[in-house]
Image: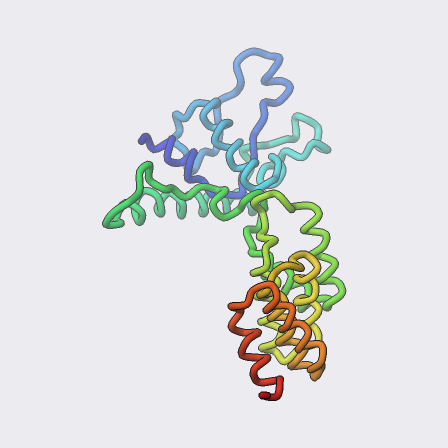
Length: 252
């Protein structure tokens, strides 16, 4: 595989798709490429554009994310060669990192599936400029603003991104959030997220068991018992619910 092909596949960077200026489109051959610090100096314009396109799609951004290419600027002021924006330098660093992963680290594995797995922009970014897991995003909002805002953010992200690869809207992230809050002894807040989980996964025995555990920790034993019983009705092999009910219900 050629170096350019590897880079096109493996690039994991905050870059964007350069476009030809109006002058370049209407006045003959485009000017030569400038300020190439990572890609080969002789890379073709088409290859560079195609590679940049993989970045924009993987990060869900446009040219202006890294380049001086804001459409509010007049065409003559859109300077793709400029290094003024910090994201452009970050992108180069990410490119070097991903190239090393694919060309060095992965090649040292004792065995690999065929065709070999390679790291690309989308491996981490999945359509997001910041490749953070959903639980990290929600806990950050919780820490800065509070529970109501964090729950509202979850609902907004779910509405915007559900069906995309950007975030995991399964049960696990909300369970992780609830668990993190319980470790901080914020049981009431944890219960909010467990109940949110039940809203979207009402037929999950695990979700009912997690809610029951938080209800029990908050002192609401009667409701906890109902939640554990619901969990067992959905999955008779639910160990958490079984152990909880054995401890809570008097032996006959």
